[in-house]
Length: 289
Image (cartoon, rainbow, N blue to C red; front, side, top):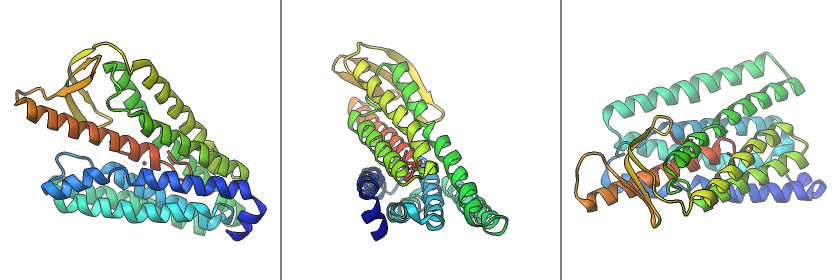
């Protein structure tokens, strides 16, 4: 890393910037898990995004160990492995039995079986630069698939004409993260790091443009809105000039509805961060579904 900082100071600077931004993105779900701890319940939240984020961090750490020119990926993704593991353990502790079993299954499948296969195949069926190329394209393919996830959020914004579930500053920092990692990859001459972040930057800009278009838009009322990709039933959404309100379909007291809508909104925002932020740290797009 010392050599990198001396020979490529700009690459080092963008790598440090990417680390700082991605660190903040990894911490975005903390309020959600504090509430999970306080209420001793996962409240229907999904575990898939955190399992995928852990898998992403493991992939990029392995890649960075093979390609030492991008060693700054190791620091942030090591932190990612630790924080995502904490999130998953907390989820398993407080989730209902079915959700626990599902989480353990997908964790074993993705982070043990699939990652183990990638590890074995690249170690025993390739070597040297060829091994780096194969793993690099695996990382690119995974990161691109993760970066597509915000499309569901974009579709939700267009459908509801509400930006409640797509905060401007979250989109801004995720875009900034993509820019930082793109230039880190470009200046480090690593296309596998740079390429996925072009897509991340494009989606980030699209989200900010949508925010500017719909932030003052007049009401769109949708009786029932459930986005399968997000895995969150939003219920009845009414958007006014003052903002968007989300009400569960079943009748409940206004205060209860307000609390639920706030929690659902926070969950979507955290999901958005998890998908967009960690779909590649190194191609930093984190996945909440």
